[in-house]
Length: 456
Image (cartoon, rainbow, N blue to C red):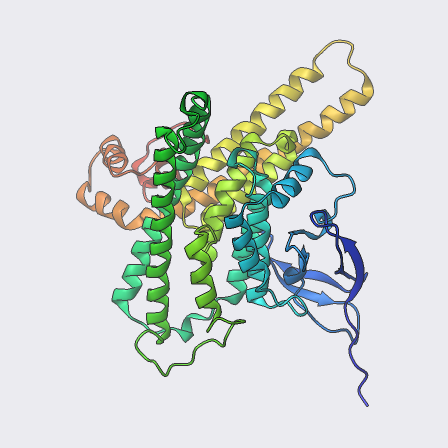
């Protein structure tokens, strides 16, 4: 008789910071598993289970804790924070002070979680819920770093759940529509970021005029414009999601074939897709796929690096900028990634120069010298990493632009190198790519032009 596999969890009652109710939360037993392989953006693709005769689950599905009474949701080790800082307490207060509209959205997500055995759909909903909890505070008071981490984990969930290309139909016109959607989405994500910044400025001015518009309800024209434009952005992304979904259904064969196999019901909804469409109609923010989630993660990571005091530590700052660069490459934003590497190199170089100047100060004690030597070594290593990553990105830029580069070379065959460089720059080829082409084995190697290499 086969022994029944034991649970990988230990359940302990944990007090919800919002409603103060106790509910069982699951902690992985020690020595259950270790990550086996990771991708470049830290996504764990496989695990090694160390314990025998244990029920195998997908660990990322259990990253969040969730209160079944009020639906407060947060990262496991931060759910019940014994050393709560001001930001944590304000998040909890904002959750408890949520209005009727926000409470309805919380309940929509919170009531649609299979928490006993968390699957992909329930894991998505938990992550959406955790982000919504964080976003209840004003946008200028968000914990951007936490939201970025949650968005990146959503991207990983989508990546794990993406069917192989072999499961899709080949319809060139639909694939072209999806390419166009991707281009438009990237443009609008940048516009949305600009709007978020502008929205904060508009709200600030509206607040300055609060007294002048007292008693006039919604008469403040700044607030009217802000609300209207915000709705327009939300409506745009909701409709873009519908178009993207239509294309995916077309490629899966379910758009025209009413008999095609559909996903099963999700609680009272006919499918998770139907639930998600309902959620998007009341809260347009949730990303619909990996690419959209990564775009969101990039934006929030960038904001946190530029505003969060936690990134005063140069090493943590460098590692996060490296992650942003990797995500940009995955989003095919190689130009943005190249720009980020430039900022990485400059920052590491500036830090090293600052440490060197500190080392030259008089009356510096030996412990301080040792600390500075460690920092200088880290800065030197960061410079090397940035230079290596820069070279990889230059090669990607060269590979991407190779067809139009060859067209320029063919039209200017026999021309002087200055004329060729001018023609290349006119079509948007950067200095770094041109210098790469002049190296040994490059397309411009034999033109014999000697130029000082400028790395950044």
